[in-house]
Length: 192
Image 1 (cartoon, rainbow, N blue to C red):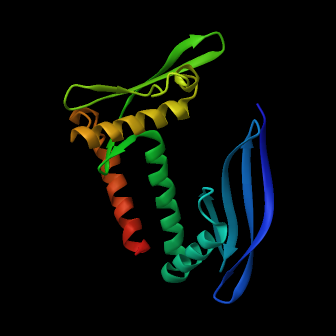
Image 2: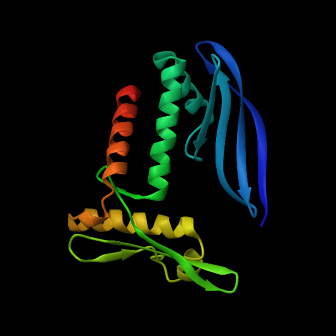
């Protein structure tokens, strides 16, 4: 397994000034995994993950505008809250701003290979699992926790939308739901 990080020095303009920045591009076994924009603006360190659809100079400008609007301390709180919201979204199923616990088992092994099983029960009795919707990727996805979770969240989201239902109440994580809603609301109020 080969992890590689390519660092590119770049610049962006904001309020008539040019600022230095760096774009870190991450590769895993030759496949691009993502980009991170890193820069400092008015003493505030900024590190933002972004996708290919986004242009780093637009993201940099948006973050500078937020820092100008909020000030350094409140921006740092915003950054912490955004990271926490993302952590919750990457570890739990979130539907309609409610955070749900899902079943997870990684005890099934075949030699060195670990198979990841994830499921979530719905209010209507249906059980959604994290297997790939494609038979071609079925076995390969089960070996990858991130892909299995991605499949689960996508399938649950689609099922809820199409069947106008939600996961079972017993899977609702009240503490994380409250934290998620509070932080998301706080973020949205400052982004407008």
